[in-house]
Length: 359
Ligand SMILES: Cc1ncc(COP(=O)(O)O)c(C=O)c1O
Image 1 (cartoon, rainbow, N blue to C red):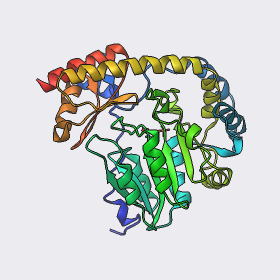
Image 2 (cartoon, rainbow, N blue to C red):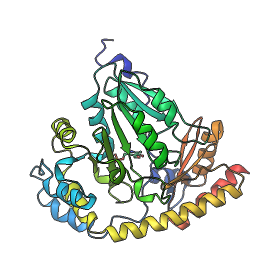
Image 3 (cartoon, rainbow, N blue to C red):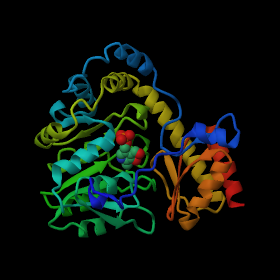
């Protein structure tokens, strides 16, 4: 057969999304199943968001503001930076792709931890770059000194996922200070803080506050998790103005769509509710961690809205056993299982399924 696409993509694993909840319920004959597989917050859209989307829907026959001016100004104000430093995109994963595009030529390297966010290797290969996976420590966190050692003269981008998806672990300020001091000035460091709003450890730095002014640092955030806009695809980053300007040139035009812009502005008006919801999730995260540890499971301390069970090659069987009881979790065979924190009732259903799976 005539080859029409790049041969190196043949072996690239596809991104696996959390399983469809309605499909599983139908399969099991349940009225509903529970999805704890995609790190969403379970409490519905924030107040004011559906109304803002309905209003914006009246003009979807028009292109959105390509400069995303109102939203960028609003984000800049919220995060204490100038608007020229803010770039929005189709989810933070879309911006991560753009970052690979603006830094890498074929053969260049992107260093990231592993296991980490499963999109990173896909993004690296997709950009024609080489993804360099640095194994996590025995404690399931980033091995920052090995990551610094992995930087070569081909490295253009280093990604630090803090807290890390899927292990929930986080790096603290002292180690991050040390790491950033080791990264050459011409290598861009992306601090991916998709789960920042769930961090309670005061020693885990807010990258925008702590490192935002470093020339080679980009801070990546998303409105998919704490801000409840996963379905609309709204991510943003903060970089130095020159870096931000280059990213804006290459980002897919209009990729922050009309509804996403309107919804994000409304979500930013509801930050008190975001804070309240995050507190609920954090309390549940700590409760579930303790309950799982009582089941003799290893559970690394999580600073995100999920917990990690390093079950090794038992991961797939554990995931299947939970699904058989109507609870969808994310198994990453042969490393472990990630479980998103849901409502207290959903979490109880997961605990019951976990107990059953381990029995
Ligand atoms: C670490 C990390 N970064 C980025 C993303 C992408 O989020 P989105 O594209 O929805 O903004 C995720 C989503 O799971 C994530 O876990």
